[in-house]
Image (cartoon, rainbow, N blue to C red; front, side):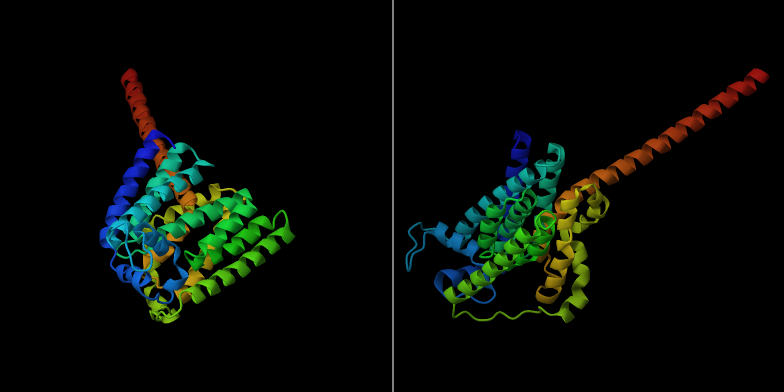
Length: 323
């Protein structure tokens, strides 16, 4: 990571950490329940981040040896997570893009997270995006063992990583169908086992009821168009520049939207944050495509104007010579 990229990453992570710390309005009760009481459903399936905060605080059964408040421990946690998240974004893009494009992608990721996570954010949101980036990298690089381990850990953070399995099967199945089938089926079994284990480990919590139904999202679906401040539109222009396997990953988007339409709330933009792992390369390429189109158009307009001026000057000179 270059010096400029490092500075931008640090500034973005500090900004995100401070901003999100003071805009979160739905998490403190959840963290207190984890530290002092029972865990409600569905939070019991998203325990990795909250337990990391508990570890930072140094909690045992009834003591707090580090003397940290929940707010302070959370600031340490999100500062650490967002810095490394932006670093992973840069490294992920740098594998197949120029450094300038990767730097643009890192900045866009910081802006997209800020946009989607306001005013509500949870400990698993940014960590979930980090897992999605790592899983996408492992899928494309065919690092099967790393992918399987990362997938198993990611399920303790959020159950949505299950939605990457169809794309993984399509990418790996192009070369070895049997291996792809075995890995995906095994991963699905691990997903079920981890979910069951979390349910058993954190019994006794209440069920948090929401508006997670189709009727709600039929009314609020336009909110999804506001994700990442509408920058996803650039992906429509840049997707064709990606290689075939990266374009296959884009098929995760309709799968994700269909799942969220049933189980999510479209007016909470934070639920779309993991899609940055798939959309970001296409968004960056799309910005360059649009810039090239605009730049080319301006050059053609300038050339046409210049040609008209030259033609007018030659015509005037010809008329003067005839006189």
